[in-house]
Length: 549
Image (cartoon, rainbow, N blue to C red; front, side, top):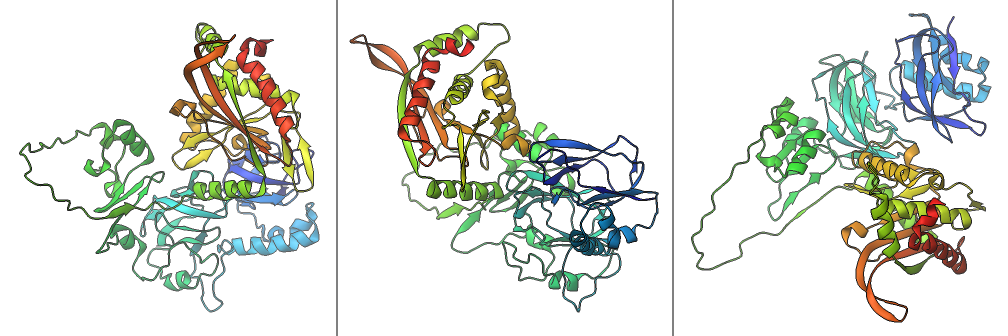
């Protein structure tokens, strides 16, 4: 007898959940105690265990999709069992109210017809066995996606579980797996093109099936970022870059594994691209040995640069003969999200700035002494994170968050640490920073920074900050201002330590100082409140041994 599995309530405040990862797929055997999926709640991402045995017959909520508690999550039963009755009318008997059940049954009926909620014109029939694949929602905030790399091309055989493409969301670049088998008949978006969630991504079906009418009449999310005016296959468009007579356009998709140049397109795996950047290798000089000439790891490892002798003959007269050109880089989803959030913060939160300069003599001596302990190394940034965490516990107004109808004074301290990545900026969160030691903070920040640059951070690791620190001191920047990371009430900008003459006890002596600027939201943090916080912070930074008491 088939059992309907509903979205569980995994926390006392949980109202809806997001399927972060399915650990089982349709057709898999399930044993009692097996982990079915990872569910993201309002508090954490948790493993969801099966209390039933059988075969996974149906998945009701895809990865990255969100649904209310008690919504249909999955169906488990005997292999080959008919579950059409449960899909059409049985949901209301499994804790889902009749209204939701009716709506859900409509959606599931569409899925059973392999349309995946796609809408086509009424006069176009979808050929038997053909499946329309739409742009998936891979994160809870994703509104559109960009095809970073196609790993299959039109005409390729596709098996269930094969990776179709790498999709760039507003948070990360993620692999998109096929849940169907067949032949890739049509590609709706070229590499580098963006489209709304549920837009036409691809069509899979029996080899040789004519799907031109389906592709032409597909309605959902037809607002791709580039108009499609040619009837030629998408692969031809990829292979033949457009040129212009008066200017040359070179585009580089830094994070996609595809580099576009004036002479054509270079296909490279993300690992090979990273290795080439680290070794300073020009990818246009590398011959790819992978599929379709794709540059892979072994090509970078075996690459020998070609050195061209330069003529030393003198030039009688120099005549500039270059042409004007420029590089055009399409905005990534991450860059769009950063622009949207920072613009909203800058123009909705009344920013003001408090500037201070701290004496760093004791901090430098403290760090040198601390790092003399074997297998121990802390940075100035680690000390600042710890000092801020302790100071925030004493000034909850600075550790607050602004919402439309309330102000939240946080008793916990979760510090966001801004990390630069090729596509922009991410802010991993050091949770309960006031309770962590300096080495623990250092290890956490180092781990987050490394995984941030490789786009391996989870959503949970980038959410929930109560205060943010941005440090550009390592680049020699003495002072700067930052935009508040809402809904936080403040962000601290940290500059470089500078050696300069200072006045102590009426005498000019050599010294080392550091400038900090705190941007405050005047709706929650008054000037005096911000000044008092910085005074407390000064005590910890200039006398760091007090952080250990």
